[in-house]
Amino acid sequence: PPLSQVLNLFEFEAVARKCMSQQGWVYYSSGSDDEMSLRENHSAFHRLWLRPRILIDVSSVDLGSTMLGHRVKMPVYITSCALGRLAHPDGELCLTRAAATRGVVQLWPTLASCTIDEMASAATNDQILFLQLYVNHDRSVSERLIRRAEKRGIKAIFVTVDAPQLGRREKDMRVKFTMEAPTVQKSDDSAGNVDRNQGTARAISQFIDPSLSWKDIEWLRGVTKLPIVLKGVQCAEDALLAAERGLDGIVCSNHGGRQLDFARSGIEVLVEVMAALRARGWQNKMEVYVDGGVRRGTDVLKALALGAKAVGIGRPTLYAMAGYGTAGVERVFEIVEDEMIMGMRLMGAQRIADLKPSMVCTKSLAQH
Ligand code: FNR
Image 1 (cartoon, rainbow, N blue to C red):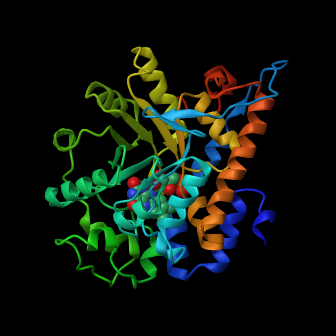
Image 2: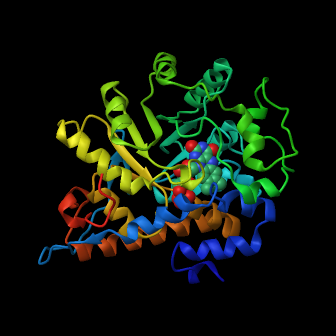
């Protein structure tokens, strides 16, 4: 359909399924094992009901917020997904351009199809960009990646901590890996030899170090002055450790249902994490983000009300880029913005700070 007739984020998935290569489609859409966590991610939002307030002047609604001190037009960001060129010849550049037009943050993936220099060239001068880091076996490779990204003005590092090994994604494993190695890695000396006789996920995961531990987070602290955020926290205990150790933020996420199957959804984890932080008065000690299954403006508002500082969107941006390039990704955020403004009005919230935990019923979530 013409882009203007795409009315919600789910529709981009149907478009992508029709127009993408089989390899791309299975890599993007798959989850691990029985895909229980994948399905749970959006379903969890269906168990959260709203308690709107009435008779509040909502003639003007403001979605403006901040992430790590940087102004954003709305607290929604493009999370890191590997291999953007499976969707579109311009790959991640479509995401960078759309993020600029819509005033949202993009995370640059370690395993992007485009190089850091290419992504930086597509960015505007004042654009806020963060780097997603997979820590390499060879720490010097990661350090060089960080330096290159720092030179290009990156403002924070999101280190992925839920993927010591990439999950079993069976659909993906059946389609042998035929693509080139991701160029961000390829442009570095120690990478290059990819075993092609396996699925895409397996083929690219050989760069990731399974020995990663809290000690390496200290190493990272010593390597860069940028804020550091842990991506993939899945329980209150680890959120508290992150806060104690002075991390700047965490993302409650199960990696789009692609890692441990039966890991809870990010939104479910968020509730547990915020309760633990609030019990210690630590709710402002670090920023807490959430991703996974966010498809509607109300999903975003639920997460923000429950304490998230911002919310990540993954697959819909890839699917939109597959069907329509940069314009498709811009449309994703136009739809989300429209839906959020409508939702704020109907909830009686003028600005993001007006969204409170009391506006969401969490009774139907699993008891922690
Ligand atoms: C991902 N994700 C991911 N995360 C990460 O830290 N590094 C990565 O390289 C990737 N790669 C990746 C590829 C693809 C195709 C997908 C779908 C996801 C996980 C991603 O950042 C995020 O956690 C989820 O995608 C969010 O869920 P939704 O919005 O896709 O439901």
